[in-house]
Length: 164
Image 1 (cartoon, rainbow, N blue to C red):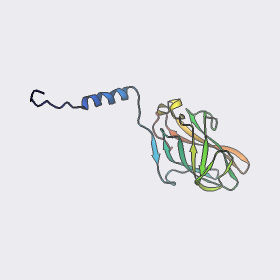
Image 2: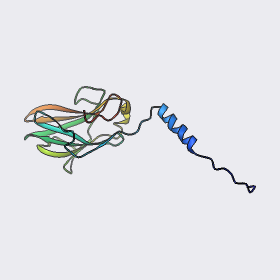
Image 3: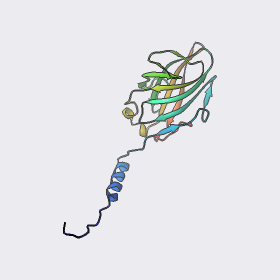
């Protein structure tokens, strides 16, 4: 060094350029929902469901489900772009109901329950979920009748839409 004070270079221009490049490439922040049950429950035919935890970069979706007697959880899937209900390409790997893990089903969910649906880690990344409408479909058997309950996770723009 020659004894002169060197002006400190700011790293801000580089950071700004990096953020601008990521935005131009279409990179998005993760989608995130976390709330207590009761904020946005949807009820249909005696079954109430609500997504209470969802992050686009993790492999599980937390739900609150309240169902009539003789209700069993048969399957769950994540579906992109309004595909046919309960036929999405991403099936559940295992389910936790009130802290009990089930690797196979069906599982009795009569009454109110906290349910965690665990999907393959690559579910969100395999379909460009940040730019597409995404749904979680829960296939139930209610008193011997099979039906599908669909909840929208994101809108067509990939932004959070769980309240719809």
